[in-house]
Image (cartoon, rainbow, N blue to C red; front, side, top):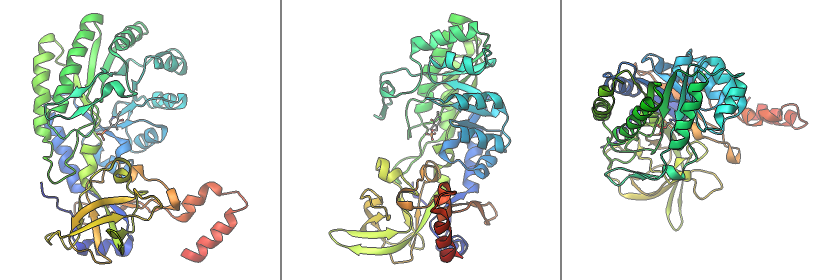
Length: 431
Ligand SMILES: *Cc1c(COP(=O)(O)O)cnc(C)c1O
């Protein structure tokens, strides 16, 4: 599907006067339309709730938008729990799905009344001690079926190789133990494949999990409150991919729900999900300016963002589509590597990419970076994280996180003999 930026070159120029490039820009209209579509796709299930995976875009202004749809938040760290609390989420709207969890984080999740999703059977006694022996009435367990997970288009993932979850035997043992300890309602969670660009993934996963909870219900006569399909619903990063259709996905899950659960008297099981990428990736872009061109054995365009702002291409070799603003319809007849400034040769946003001729000062719109983009930023080479901006529905722009300054980078040297000099230099540079 053709990729169209949600701003023009003129708009980018206007924004850059106030917030110099690089910056992230999120599209509120796109976020809201998609959130509506998700809600509608699962409206057949009265208990349905999306718990937005905070790690994808940990910004309270973005999270707040999801409050309007009664979504919750999937958290996996103390900071993420704090963000969920800060935007007003109550315990029922917080899912704590972590692994290798520090005791302090379980304690805080319990204090907020979050739904705790255990990653391992050994966490039952670990958590029991933290809670002083009393479990919440509702507990969730994360399942790992092992082996491989295959879909008909050849997409495959390898749960047997992943560190998450209980084996099936452990899961049964876990439910038995927790029931004995007074837990009344159970949820089952699984995350078996990532960035699946097929409408088949959720229904296939749901079929496995519905069979499993029916068996748990039969075996232990426990109440299954929810099945959490987690994340993994992908987006079309390439214009040649076909985007997922959430309405088709919702309908596919409904069909297996009706076939497997309804006739077993389990028609009150709520469907939860924890999508991150699908909720935000297409509705965020990294906007960066071309500042250098270099002709050696290949043609390079140097931009003012780097992998510290967007790590996915360097880390996974991910494709992110690039539009040169103002040249949307120009012939893509130049082959470039688009690079950042890190002293790392993998700091490239694109390799051998056909783009229109790029002139210095052109704005590059790097698509589909709204999830796992800013969030994965880091400070290597003393590079700073950019601002995050929200393009509101009325066309105005709101700063939802300021850009870092050098003094943020140096903040952890506060109180040392070097801090005075750093501060003084900063003042001279920036006033
Ligand atoms: C990362 C993660 C998600 C979100 O995954 P997406 O692929 O971004 O949808 C959901 N749940 C858990 C437990 C995760 O770790």
